[in-house]
Image (cartoon, rainbow, N blue to C red; front, top):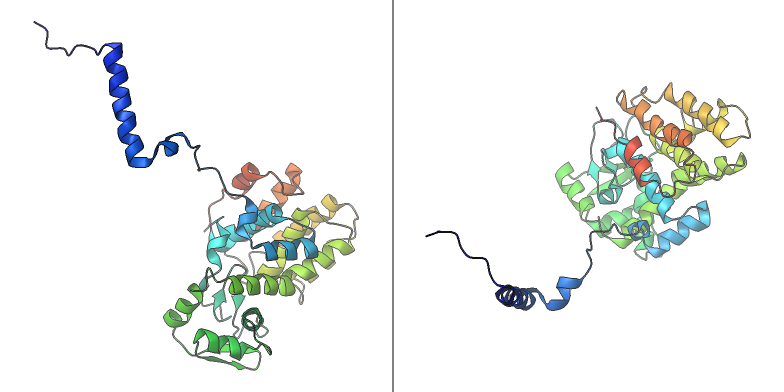
Length: 300
């Protein structure tokens, strides 16, 4: 006599299936069993408020997908993470004598190596975004309960790093903070980058993004290693690819110096943009695979 269990008849199989279906439907709802997967990626536009999207389109000519890709390329060498949107509330003293580093573009409060920081402008913009009639740094600090004051052009924070950064982290999802972040980012770095691109007849997302990355990493204007200085040494070609190749070559020579980046992160930072240029991906559209490829390097 066999100990094997007999297979179920077709009728009994159908009955068993209906019983299982009824149980699942009662637990989860019948409609849920037939809904498509929600694992598909959200639109890049979802990473920006409608107001910020319009702001960026009007002033740069680039859309949400292009800015989302620019920010991925910027954030890889900054945070070693393509998910840049997590860093609106970023705050840390990285001991670079520039004070605290804050947010998606690394605004600083200032110090011996940064006597004209952009952090104060960010706090003033936040006070304005919250509705202040006469916005000020002091007004923003008061709103946030931060113990600090301006000393010349430097924002001195009296609170401990734990206290100060704790308050900044709480702003991660604050719409006014995000609005202020993009307005300041534009005023300090993006506007000059776009102007310099357009003066040369260049409008591509890759060129604008490469210039913005240089400006926030090495400064927009000033000495020979800033965006301004590098552009002056990159020739006068009106061919966008030719100009950008030379610009990247000049930047590669200095990007790992002067504490801009720890080697070889700087060279890899520039290589991201240069490789996309070689791929012909100037508009930074439909480039998910290419972005993943050029950002696959290991940060040191």
